[in-house]
Length: 181
Ligand SMILES: [Zn+2]
Picture 1 (spheres, rainbow, N blue to C red):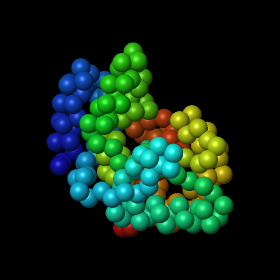
Picture 2: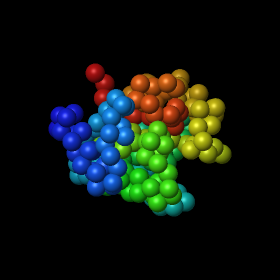
Picture 3: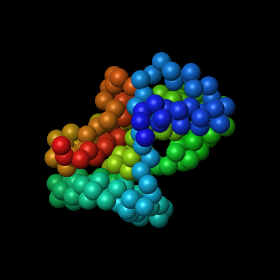
Picture 4: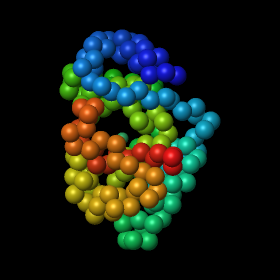
């Protein structure tokens, strides 16, 4: 799908959520294709909750290799989010709406459906034991410093550094695997 087609799909979902698409018109948000579910494989299972995190096969392989090397270096990293469908993203927005939060506020940290890199099956949210990733203090952990030094070797890049052009908050926990060019 082209970017205009993807944008039209997002606008439609926003209207279904009773959100005026104009609320994000001033942002230069990227639109992402939703990967077909049959291309996803199980990347990791949360040992406590049993929740299954899925990524594409190449992203899964890269994640596992990176995690293995991190562990060998004494750094624990694990997934707290991976692939998300457009429906799931819409559900996250409904939760914010139910809490009475305005779209212009939650869209700084939550992507509109269609604008989340998690739709690609290549993006991951990472945490490390003893850290609350949601507050952003993940950026002060040894695990983050390890990722800064090593993630690129496995094809992972931090998507939203401080002052990123899309107007998302700094997300040190969010990384995306990109195929080698
Ligand atoms: Zn993320």
